[in-house]
Image (cartoon, rainbow, N blue to C red; front, side, top):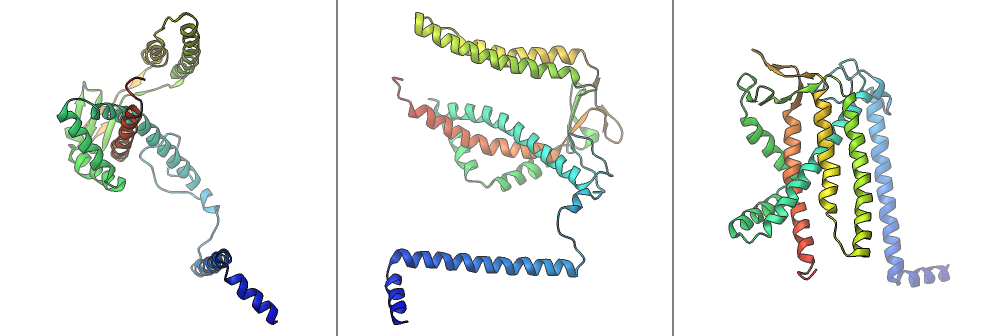
Length: 289
């Protein structure tokens, strides 16, 4: 027994052993605490008649959702409304990625401008936005900015086709989306062709020394060509145009104000970080290169 105690004292004098023992003790304490909370929560939920598990996903939700990319009604299940929420989140994220990239690239270039006023204003914007929590910026975009829009009866209109008010944005909607699948096919083909063209231009320049405008050609294949296909497809389908009535706007597709606020906040917030990445990337390359 004395030998065991002596060995234990010798082992505890080792700093690594003490650290290991302390970490194990903390993990065990957290495990016991977590077990206590789980057992306590299960007991309280059973006393209140609440069920655990994912069985509720098959129950009827009983409420409607303003923006939905798939079929959804008041008789749909909670699993369906969860899928609607996931798709709406992906839509907002995809839109914010595109807009923030464009705005951030422009701000990063503008901050390197020789114009003192432009560079200072952009720098101030970047420093302020990067130090403001995203949730606070979301509230600012939703209440003061979008909350100042007029009501539905006094909507801001563009050529009688687009209406903007405090309820959201109403846009013309195509009655059939099948023709627009050609746009995705043209875009995919343009990306493949642009990659092949870029490689061919690099091999040609290495062999002959003659440069080829690969960037302009790639933009034409990936941007101009899909836009032209979208215009052609849009001219072949019938459109549901929104109409301003006495009690609101009917027809078209309605983009709610909440999506606007999320897009605006994510774009402004993320663009500030992208601008700094662009600026740092440019400054990291020497003038000679």
